Image (cartoon, rainbow, N blue to C red; front, side):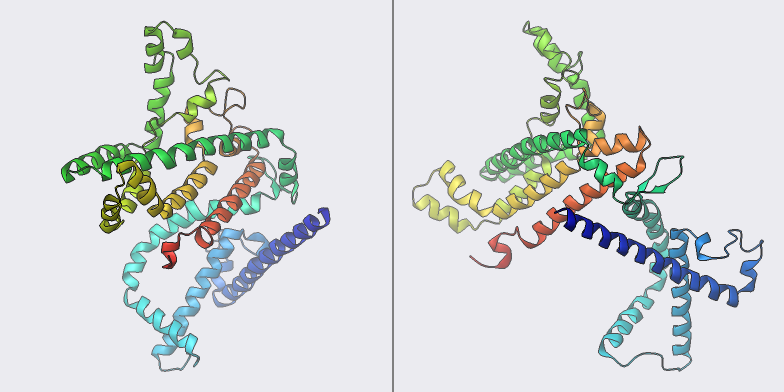
Length: 395
């Protein structure tokens, strides 16, 4: 097993080195070409970066230079084509690509209007997300010197007992969340679906969907107030003579995890309710009529007809619930920050603590890479394996 891990580490390290050398090598070529074509780039006035070699260029600037140079080559190609010079290859694939590019050129003005939005997305969303795969292999402390350590962060993670404790807590939260979010919304959706009045069904859907407009942080802040010693729960227990039970719900190690789990009670989540309700609406009326002819009551119809026909929605919500559980962070940050101790610590909060409390950004990026790989694998399973028979058109 250790031999396989060493081979895998060597392959990944080689791929990373080849990719880096390839990108920076191409950037070096383009810098040399630009210096030859535009001599003023070497002057201090027009070259404030003082680039002399590819080693002087950071990876983001190298990518920008590559894209800009490719854009210049595209404009040159387009100018030659407009002048009558045949530059288009004769292959069918190349012709199809050229036809698609010609359609894009028709709306070039609109695409240029969208360019600032795409640039902001790349700079503030995509580049930071991609950079974690690089920083995960470095000892990278904010304000310190970055040092390449290979798989050192992952080796530390493999022996980090607190990290595995956070993973254990995460699985407990996921198990409880899936139990409530997959069953209670289905029951409520079934009750709404079988109401006789269409107006009543519409009113109930609106009532359960309206809370979705409240931001998640505001939602958790409301529950934080509910759990305080002066909140609703504490006042209720105090009114019945059990005041001690309602105090310190989020600070007591015996109740903190349960308190976080019960956030959102009675667990009728609007998105889950709408997905189940849409599945129930797609059930042919003939099935319900046949169940009535057979003498099935409302409960038996729900168990034997409705539930089997929403298996696809059930699987979808199952995958979404697992992914949301793996990304759990906001509720822990607002309610407990992982405390008391490590009773409510989850990997997302653990990563946040190492990144912004301990300034160990490299180790935090390694945790992010592990979470990304797990979520990516689950997404692939959802796309390829976990599909209902109706999606394939088979019985």
